[in-house]
Amino acid sequence: MLSAFANAFRTPDLRKKIFFTLFILAVFRLGSVIPSPNVNLENVNQCRVQATTGANAGLYSMINLFSGGALLQLAIFALGIMPYITSSIILQLLTVVIPRLEKLKKEGASGQNTITQYTRYLTIVLAVLQATAFVTLAVNGQLFQGCALPVVYDSSLFPLIVMVLTMTAGTGLIMWMGELVTERGVGNGMSVMIFTQVAAQFPTQLWGIALHKGTQPDNPTMPNGAGWVAFIGVLGVGLLVMAGVIFVEQAQRRIPVQYAKRMVGRRLVGGTTTYIPLKVNQAGVIPVIFASSMLYLPMLFSQFNPDNPVSSWIAGNMASSASPWYNVVFFVLIVLFTYFYVSITFDPVEVADNMKKYGGFIPGIRAGRATQKYLSYVLSRLTAPGSLYLGFISLLPALAFVVLGEQAAQRFPFGGTSILIIVGVGLDTVKRIESQLQQRSYEGFLK
Image (cartoon, rainbow, N blue to C red; front, side, top):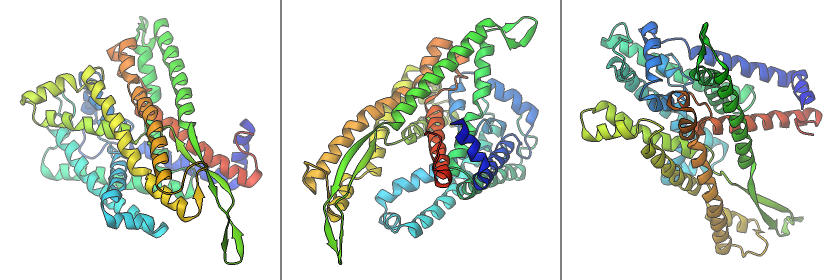
């Protein structure tokens, strides 16, 4: 494996792609720490510490995840990659209900390019809306609740418009850099950038767990022995969880498909045997993102209308990931969204029709309606453990509250969304590099 890594840097073309990707990621992280115009950085840093350790830490950790900590710094890349993710999910869902989009999806590369263009436009619209919402919350003192310090120098209209435009332009720049990585770098650009933002918070969060268990009297910045024990324990648990996630993410049910021989012109084609790979986690991380977004809506309602009795109940029961109500609703939403997303991304009717059209059949199953029922049955049996797996992984921070305590668990880095993104994107990137190595030297990471 180490020799394969060395070969990756010895290959000129692959080395250029790796260094180009690292350069884009460095620029990406730099933009995540540069504040937007009109931001009082000193006050923002003080308010950010209070926000991430107070009662609303669960809320802030959720909305701050995909920005890599840039949102609570009001940086130029404060919105991160989230507007693009949201627009991609919306377009993917709309292809099921809008015939025009469904037709474009079936047109191949040209139709996909048109859908990609629609995704870019929608990303900018969502970025304007989200930037306006977060700037308004920051000016009104609701983004950093419990902090009375002003986070902007001038709250008049023009400086606030400049802040909104800066954050929107930052999102557009992120989208462009992600596409550059896809074309000229290694891996899927957007996925790699999400990976970078999530992984960037790991060192700080792990160090925070060590500090929470106590510090040395002569040096308050260094953790004592109990802190190191907690640090090593959390790191060990994280590695075990990652190993389990890798095992489940790689698990799949292979349904054998046989194609009958047939004449095409003067040639006899077909007679091959292949399979349909159905993953246990067919939906990936999308249901967790759906559920997090849905839980964020009532929290926004409670912030904009704090005097409502419903808002009081939401603030008391849904604002913290340690709340039983929060975890129950989160788990149920993940299960429901998993079934929903799998049903719209894998259509047994379409698969069965395509197999019948090209002379394919599952051994022991009739082509047509019987094949459709069989695929639906197998998919439902796989989706059940897949949804429970996603729900369990997503509740890891709640278990951390029980074991580590509230203050340390707020810095627990191995949350469901984080670990699924890191493992999924890491596996995909390694496979892409391995495939390029095999094209050049027929030797990958695994011999």
